[in-house]
Structure formats: structure tokens, C-alpha cells
Length: 259
Image (cartoon, rainbow, N blue to C red; front, top):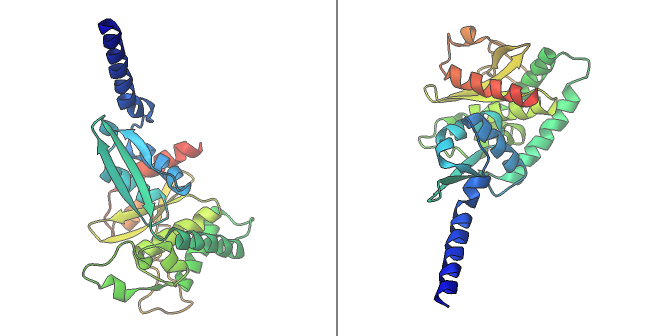
């Protein structure tokens, strides 16, 4: 009887250990924050419950930056670190229904503005001009001492549905417009400038597009500047500061995904 009780105890301990380590054993291996961001984007688009990673393989801050670059929705990233050496990352999309409505509107706008015979450069220009004409820079929000970074002016729904946004709203809206015509862009965030804009790869070359800087303040209706449209890194660095290596890696990994 004692022997049987001992066997049962061992089985319980083994089973408990297996359950303890199962999430780690089945978690995806990622080599960098860009791979983790790709998995989280898939999960977020499906309105999933999050992704479990091995703790040593993810830095939530770096994953957030990579996801912000590629996912055109305003969101928060929740991290739960567990004793079994796993970290669950979960994306919470702000105002999901409204941002999804903005994405549908971006698709409709793109369909009206772009034709199949256009080159990618022509498509990018048309969408840039469409957004600048549609949206006005939200000076009131920009001047707030402690703005709510999840509010509409910081997201595509502010730019596309309310026609008023700050740089993050422009950048995310432009990302949605480009995605609607099959062009992958990323959102570049600069802490030094408290500003953001877009980047794209054309024929292996990285170019930058700052719709915010091309929209005059005060708004001038149909007038559109193209001073910050498709600039090289060398050209943009005369006025902008950003983590160039990080965002080149984001673009590199997106190209690998699509190759």
C-alpha cells in the first residue's frame, strides 16, 4: 500500500511538472523582437488571447516598438511574466470597432484613388495626397501637456473618420491606405522628436514619407506639399532624427516574411 502511494505521488509530481513546463515547451521560438511582433500582429488581427513566449527571448519594450512599426492600429501591450520562465504578451486594440471602421474606409478611399496601371510610386503619391487633403493637423491635441496617446487623434480613425489627427494618426492612416493597395509601409517613431512618419522599400531602397510635415498648418484645403515625400535616409536626416538601424531591421524582416 505504501509502495502504491509512493508511485502515485511520483506520478502526480511528474504530471505537475509537465503541466508547469508545457507552456514553455510549446511556445514559439523567436530570435528577435521583429519575429515576436509578427506573431502578435496575427494574434491581434484575430482578436486572440495573446501569445506565450520564452521569457529570455522577448523584451516587451522592443517588441512593442517593432509591433508599433508594422501594425497600423493604436494599441497597448500587456506583459505577464510567469515563474515557469514564460512571458505572455497580449495586444489590446483601442476602440477596435472604430479602428476597423477606419480600415474599411481606407480600403474604399484607396479603391477610389488608385488604378491598377499605376506604379507603386504613383500609388504612394496619390494616397499621400489623398490623406493630406482629407486630414487637418490637430493643434489642440498636440499642445496638450499630457495627451492621451490612445485617443482618436493618435490613430487612423482620427485621421480618416474625424479628419483631424496628430502625426501618429497620419502615420497609421497612411499605413492602412498603403496596405489596402498591397504596399507594405511601416510607422517610424522618434522619441527625440516626439514625432512619427512612414517608411517603405522600393526596389530594395528605403524611402521615407512624412504626411504630417507635408500638411500645412493652418490647413490650406486642397494644397499638398511633397517636400517630405519619398526621401532617402540621407535626405531625411537633415531634418529628422530616428533609430535608423532598428527600422531597417523591421523592413528587412517584413521582406523575409513576404519572400
